[in-house]
Length: 303
Image 1 (tube, helix red, strand yellow):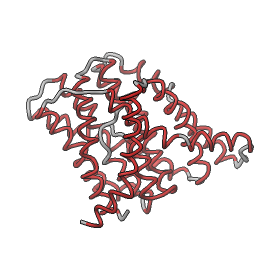
Image 2 (cartoon, rainbow, N blue to C red):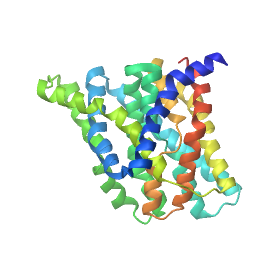
Image 3 (tube, rainbow, N blue to C red):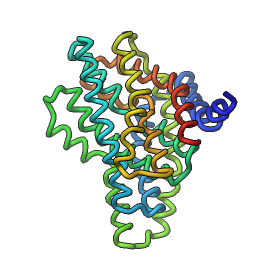
């Protein structure tokens, strides 16, 4: 018990303290998280990705494996959610909301800081690639699910082009494979902006949780929380040997699969009016419950 408490205090409590500061900021100063979210996602996070890739000199397969792993996990979790929901005779609109809640995890503003605190910078590189694929899928497959296929091809491709992280990966690969030296002014700029990503994402998490309130629907919410917090990491542990991901990279990507529901899912659910109050409630509940499951998983992974 003392070991679990130490793991929680060292790796998870700092996350909630910083997110709590964002929560209080939003509650008392009424700060709108939307522009803050745009800055973090479109500016700070791409530079964080660029820095991690170029500084750790990851090779082709080291870049591909975590992204492929994320793709497989997301698709399998979607299949499991759909099958369970159908067996429980849940109506189609709610199934779409459940898919948004279970398939996409908060791999960015929650997952990345936890991985950094628990396993360090090297593990963070692989976790960041997992996060990038998760973000790509939210803005493509997530849109398809929310729109029920009505905007599948055009909307998905449009959203993919709008993700700055894609260009950060491409630029990083150019420097890695050509051997070009990054100009010092650009390197220092990238480092400063990238360093702002983790604290910004944590403050944003608190702000987003404060501004959202959800509607309680016991059965679909229970299923969604169970799949997101328990089924997802168990599935990851079973599948990880087949992807050749080892060491701290393995620890980082497995930890990412156990994160609570993605806050970004609430934005998509709201835009397409797919039970947004339910999706928001799942995000909130899974975030509150996540220390219980993550502390155990961190212990298992050797944090």
